[in-house]
Length: 315
Image 1: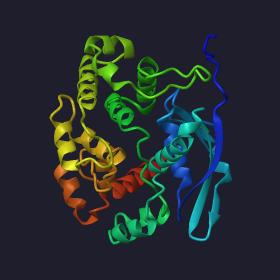
Image 2 (image 1 turned 180 degrees about the vertical axis):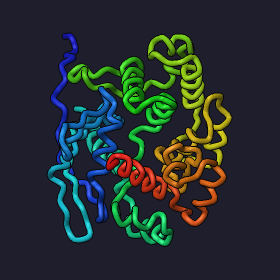
Image 3 (image 1 turned 45 degrees about the horizontal axis):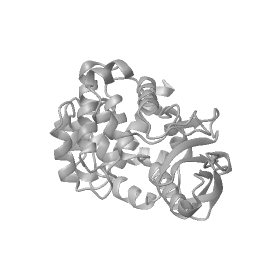
């Protein structure tokens, strides 16, 4: 007889994600909201609306819903409940669940040590009030190195909203496998297919400038050929490999190091908002001011961004 193509229902798992207190849930929720890619993320309206994220696991596409309104604070610890909808491959279930949880922990920086971060940075008179205002601020990480790296290129010199739209178009056009039971969710990117697509075709498909399309294709080719963006990668080699690509400059490399490689000392000295927060106009001055912040310059950057944007909002 003919083999049945019917799928069973995804398997649901309820988990609790623990992290050291303090934990700035509001800042993380805001970050996820303004960076939500249609087809890959869905954040409910409201200060602590649930957020659902597509997570790529060995068995296919998982969906993780974070229940922000149910966040529990315990002595020294915070717990964030989540619901996982895992692919219906029971032989891979344990591995898929572990992979989804590891991805969420990276996305939310749940393994951070807020006490160590504070001790490292609060000696600086510029950072001390920022850390006091947001003692549990985290450094959000990438769900997928390939998706995040290509998304960083798509986000160069455009608004956050425009960057999200471009990422959604890329995800729709180049997903490995469409999910039949949930077509509104896009699966993992097929980086080899992006690499094999002519830059002119990428330009017209996604609505990019010529230069951005060439950079996207060049980076996809490097990733398809083995450029390592995992957290275990040699950061010196990876930085050099990225900088050698046409269209990839120091700012993009440091953002990738910060969000994808997990380099907590990465420092995008050329970032406009960072320099405005520091009150300087040159990369050299920004680097000089940050000398005493190592090995936590990434967290210092996150605090400076947050403080500057909050001050702007108040005005």
